[in-house]
Length: 253
Image 1: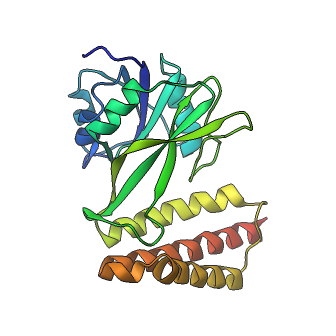
Image 2: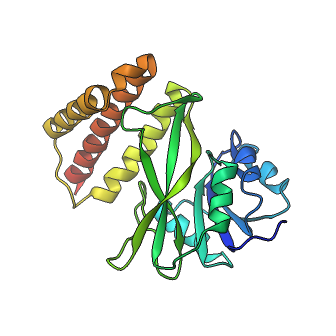
């Protein structure tokens, strides 16, 4: 491995990630340490991970995305943590930039993510200009405890700096994948927001309608043809089911 300035531990969560995990890991081989935390893969994910010599593989049950990322970071030997999803592929330019940065322990580094549907770049529907906070010093920063849509806790003394290079995100390839993830994530969102938000059938309908208008018209999904329509409808459905599931949880109390 070529000597570089920065000692960085990469953390990755996996579950049935066989489609992109090999490309994901190959792009990260120059980092000092790669930690994979798997929560129940039943496909070839584990076999693919084990084919890489520099991976530390841990297994556990699903306790929420935020808690899992903190758990993975706790296994790291280095204090600088780079959080990567298993369907994300870092460019050579981004890896070079990360390894040679002048690092500040009071700074979180934000990276631009290019989102794709079925390998087509999507820069509408709210998927464009997607900056994500992924690189941080673990003694000063950690993820919140959200079950889904986790994010880094940013205190008043922590700065956020944008990096120059980006990575590629291959999140969905079919409508079925959109529906499956929507069902899972809306369930987790409802659990996260029980007691924090109000909901009703009318609220669910109004928020879903507002989501479609925002995605398809304001965020210009109509410019991307079929994919823009599909993603805008999916965004609206996701909002509807989040609030309907929250409403049902509230009724059960």
